[in-house]
Amino acid sequence: MLEQNENIKEILREKNLTQKQLAAKLGLSECSLSRYLKGSRIPQNEDAHKIADFLGIYPKEWFTDSVTIKEDKNGVAGAILKPSRQSWEQIRTWPEAIKALGTTHTISVQDICQILHAPRNWVNRYILPHVDKIYLPDGKRAGKEVNTNWKEVAAIQLGKDMQDSTWCSKDDFDNLIMGSIHSVTKQTKLIPVELLVQDKKAFAEEYRLYTERIEDLAETLNQEPESPLSRYAELSDLKKQQATCYRRQLSNEGRQILRTNMPSAANPDATKSIPVRLPSVPIEKWISPEDMRDFAETEENGHRYFFKNGYIRIILSFIDPNGNSVKKNFYVADSETLYHKYVEEYVLISEEVWQTYAIRLMSRR
Image 1 (cartoon, rainbow, N blue to C red):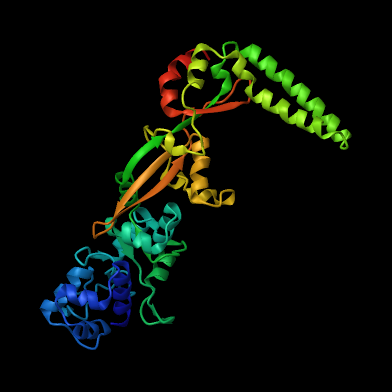
Image 2 (cartoon, one colour):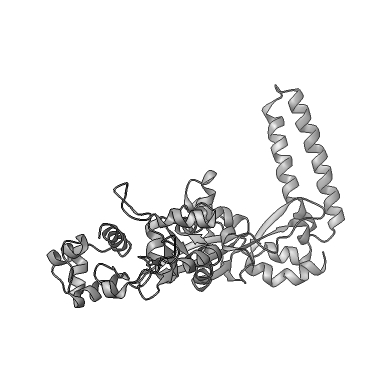
């Protein structure tokens, strides 16, 4: 029972239960349950089924007449695999398990943790109860080999590193994620400012003239670093004028758009979230706000980055076996990103405004 006891302890941790709480749920005394799990006492048939059904395990020490071992000439290939994290009804033979690990059950708990940016105990609680999985015991207890290391056997047969003991159905995982989508929305759209002007070529020429003046002044300041401070201020003013010179050449639609409430990263909640279709981007490519930690120290700053760059927001809602729910946010880049043709200058507008004017703006592009 040593290996089985370790499996039971891990299952209890996943379910956030102590042995005392489990005993209360099953109507057993804590002392009796402790002895069963330690292997110092064999439970009666009724108690054995209570524990097995609740935990999803079927220890052969308790049900010797129900367990068979089908060995081949090497004593391995036909051994019945009884993963502790599968219900005991879902028995797989070892060849079936190997086939699944090479074809369908190809995503490990470690992989899921990385994809969802979540700790293992979170994945154990919100993901594993909803997907089919195969558990490969490593046969160790307290660092010592006490039984067959099925993880190593699988690694040898498959010819790859089995870095994790729990492997899940990739289809089940993908379907769970798709079924957990709470909303797909967008708040902002980053568009080239040239879409807002009446005469794009005239605007591009004015912008070019500003560029020349800025480059000339910057070169002068590099050669004469002791220039008066006013000259540096002049360079800064020129850059601001260049960035806003499109406002002098606005089309009717451009004027109407700039009169609306323009989005502000300082107050993103003031900009309405508009439902959009889910982009065809693999789950592994979705971005978490935590990915932005290199240049955004807080998650809030990460959200602002996505807001200012017109990203699509995906909110997932997961439910644990007890009915408790939790949400996680992910982002993907706008699948219909617009790029400039004349001037590399962009303006941020709300997605709601974009959807109102998109046809008219694009028809004149």
